[in-house]
Image 1 (cartoon, one colour):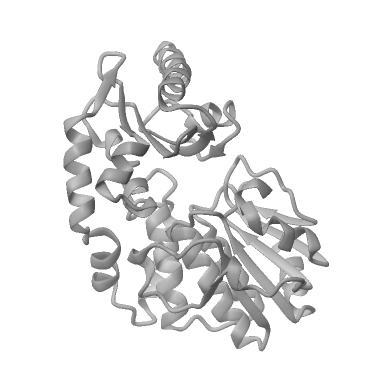
Image 2: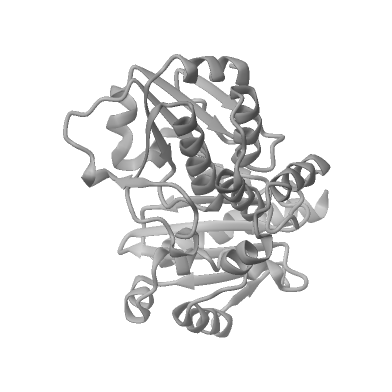
Length: 324
């Protein structure tokens, strides 16, 4: 499917649900809100549906969402658009909304996307789903105002690590420049998104640094957050997930790992790499996916077993990478 074809689908529909992936990040939220605001300009009935409250750090963004438990039973949408979602499993309990829709659309930029919808647009060359939405709005003839620009700026800036990651291109900067031309306050946006932490997060970082583990002569750094620790410290998903890039920033580390025990027997794993390890392949071997330098998966086992299996796979990837 092309973006022009997607635009035609949107123009011909009236009742559209936008489904970001579970535990939505900045790209997912910013893209979803931007599309919703654009659909409103086109006089479309649209809604963003999530399973949990969006992270507090993004609460300043313009856009409305509903939680799944607020959706009337039996409600069917003529079109469901999944954004930044690698496969249907990341819809979690909202899968029934997707399956009951007359038309399903999947818009994403992850190389591991399974193209699970009737209509799929997956551009792995885009730095973020926000870049794709920017192009789509241009085709739809929607003027990007300050609210839409702020959403898409957050989408792209968060998925590129503040324009520091390797997925950042010259086009990424050109698009960001277009957002600045709308008059958005990027200093304030960046302060809110990148430079503000809660006291709980600060204490968590201190705990994580104190207990970080190193393997393969310092090429692998691992942080493990047990369910007991998460409950004791009152850590939110947002605060826990925010540590995923910390191990990778240490000098000499190629792969950084964050293992978070969300519940007994359920461990969420975040992979980050610097130069030569394709962590999307490692994550895929455990049923996950993502990007070459940032991926994730979930293991249904206890922390000890999860750590053992993940380390075995990552050590092998590091050794192979060094040899190459």
